Length: 212
Length: 212
DNA sequence: TGCCAAGTGCCACTGAGTGCCAACTTGCTA
DNA sequence: TAGCAAGTTGGCACTCAGTGGCACTTGGCA
Image (cartoon, rainbow over all chains, first blue to last red; front, side, top):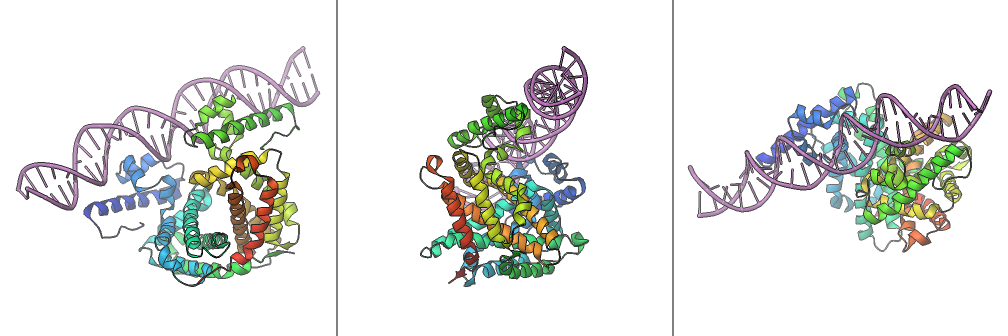
């Protein structure tokens, strides 16, 4: 989670606060001093969390760095059953769902998301970790589609292609969003949603691109 | 390189042989005993290469594991100027080029490529490393297209979408290829090329997929 | 033959990530 | 309200990938 929800038990709120503290320390530090120069040990010291707990809260250092963006895909995965119950073009359904998820992200999400996106563009290893989560999303969609459209031949390949385009459109949108001047303080989620709609709408025609 | 070419200086052939020895030891070992259970130190001992040299020959352990598959994309990157000089639908051009590159892989490539593909499907971290190389390919294509079609608005998004579909089609083809029974001894590159042609041809229609 | 730069081996080091276990919370029960 | 059982945490030592530094070797060349 990007901002701790004020719900759940005392314990789970404590965990959420620790996670949040780590994020607030880490992402600006990565931006200022570079990803590699900031060690997990130092982060734990700053956020007053033991290293052992760090690895209970996050899958790893890259996961921490990408938490704001990954949370979008993880939320989408959680909502998948409801999303795939809709009807219409699959790409459009996924695009709409993605916009809705971004819209529902907690307040203050933008600031860290921009830092996260910049980091991802800079460091291939982080980028790769982000793709792992997208791949997990794809896998879920493929499984769900294969189960629901078992009779349609090639349904799983369709799902795979649609997800690839969805992920690419998302990346393009985030990339444009994050590269605006002063995005770290000015970027709004409404802008991102507009960019997402735009790149999803443009995708089908984009596939037809020709070399002269 | 998957098989050492018998060209170049004495020294470069020695390097190629060391790389090849590492691959021949590593991929079967990964398949038999699991990726994590096989350490770089052990591999170096077996292949009689110092650890320092290991990291001179490969970008890392994951790179080693994916060398056969990554070599395809790396070759494609090297050929990019010639490939993008062709005309026609971009997706088709990339698909054809991919098939040609696979066709040109050195003898014996199939055996290790199958092991590599299986590993990639099993271990998300390896999968991610593979996507880094594909992403590098995408970036090159985007740059080249942006330079050549500077006047066309949205040309870079087009390139990105096409590359995403190309990568997804490639993955789908390799996945099917590798999952055939006894693929590690029976799979041929002709089969893979046929599967590649098939999934590239099916991609445009796949994007139109609808939920009922 | 002898020089030189590229390539190599060795060793110590850093930093991510994990296994283990004792100490502590927390929520529940008597 | 005391106490208990289950789950959580922190500290520590450990493994392993990957790197920096430096002396040494070796192929290529004059």
